[in-house]
Length: 477
Image (cartoon, rainbow, N blue to C red):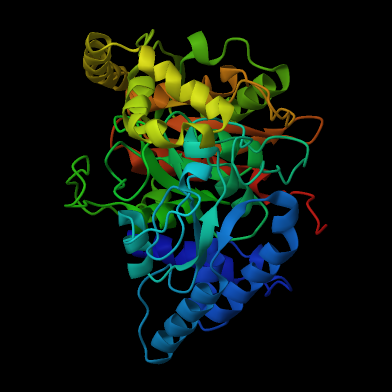
């Protein structure tokens, strides 16, 4: 299928449905098509999201800051532009939100910490500039684990975030607010950050798609860091198509960000139409499939059977061993050390504990670890001479109960962390539910800058299954 024909057929599929009574039930793709055809306006979409936020955010606690007035003003401006015959792009008039470690000019960026409770950004982050240029409407800033240094969404100074599939369960973290806002239809897409699984684990726990791109593909300028060598920003949406559309908007070189890559402009939406029949799948059973919850194991094995039927082969592979690698710990401490001198008492106890662990890493140990990180990234590239993509469970466990003061078991991030270290583009997509109705996620990873292939298989699997169509049972309180 030609690129032009694929896009036409794909987008037309969204407009074939009757207009839902609640506009927030539209996917980003469907909303984009309706805006383009003037079947719905940016103001109508924005009002629908704001109304839903007003009803459900008191229950879910997904947003820290809702910029209602600015969002409506932006939507009206975009609506006026459309009346004059101008559309900025597929995101024109589409309401989205960003994690509250990403700067938006004139709006608080707190990183969910009392340390930065009154910090107001002076300029937009690189991704926010791109979103605005594409015509996205910014609804506000999303709740998270403090400074992105936890993975259950319980350490925010604004209170814990609740999973819309089970309010007593964690939505994952640290991008918990981003995942919850998307899953609960509070926005059409969100931007999260991922240093060790903080996009993909919440995506798995909330039954959405979450994409960690290759390091440097999406600018991190204007995002408060956790660890510079491992930080990523990426899209979180209800479908793979929506995720590709949002990635299309935010990817690209940023001359003001040292780690930003100079790569050719890529059409990630068109890549969804690529054939998957020649793809070779690799299954790294050692480590990634060990000590996995039985229901997750069954769901992933079922997904592998589906994928096996749409690809050329499935074989076991072995990935390079990582071992102790204190890069994140050392870099996080380096960022926080100046703040600790003045505001130590304002940190959540668990965040402070995590940060102070980095003070124990010596300079020689960090240098050796950083060197080892580069070597591991070279070694893992050799695996892709044998296979094209890797398939793993996103998490070894389903969402756990929210428990104040608990030090969570890092096994919840075990399968996600290595993909940051290897620097492999990775998406988590829904692949089933436990008997208790909790979502299960599947990771698809590709070689560095292999985003198009990852998205192609993710889209093919998504279309062959129905997991994305389930709605969380959350109701207004």
